[in-house]
Length: 306
Image 1: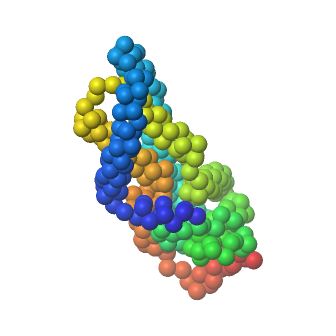
Image 2: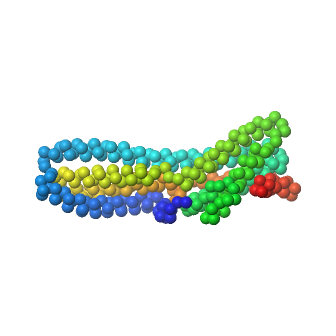
Image 3: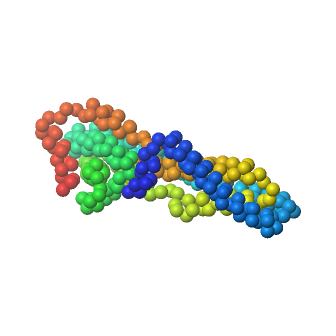
């Protein structure tokens, strides 16, 4: 489950969220400058800051800045790659479901129709599961009925459907050479589907940027800003502006990393609109079954649930 504070912030428009982080960070920079300027004045009066040290101090600050830039790049790039990976997982899961739906049309029996019906229901349930993830709700990650009480019904239903699709696909009995080829490809697709689905859900629950990385990110910014106040003879107004601007840049990068690190939550959620398209497409492709065919197909799912 995503912490409520994170869910609330991620529900904002991404542009508004970035702007809010920038403004708050700029204000924090002015507050930090007000405190550190007092320390800098004390160092000047006590004679700890000397002109012969200015050149060395400037060079050392530049080295620290380069090291910190590498850390910033690592944090932002890691978050960006996480977001791209989430898009790839989503797209691959959708492709697996679509391919499996059309592939099992080669089995003109109750088992094949049952799998296609379950896949159509899965696409429908995923629309609701995507809404759950957008809100930051806890998903049921278990494939059995033993789910936490806080788990929502769509994620439970998705678990059962995914489990039954996999079980039914393995239970298919090919009768012709064509069906044998289709069966082997179907096994590959259902394994890919299961793997992508589990990884997507696990990625929703976890964070790529761990606490230690965030701590290093903020600590590096603090060290870099703190060091600039050990140089004498600076304009206090200009230094305050520079500090505020630096904090604003840090705030912008923090906002971007924060958004990218939660690709399935909030207003910037990885798009799940393809599930709506698939649901409509599957409903059109499924032939109108007779009463006996519909009952037989539904029994495939009912037997699996038992």
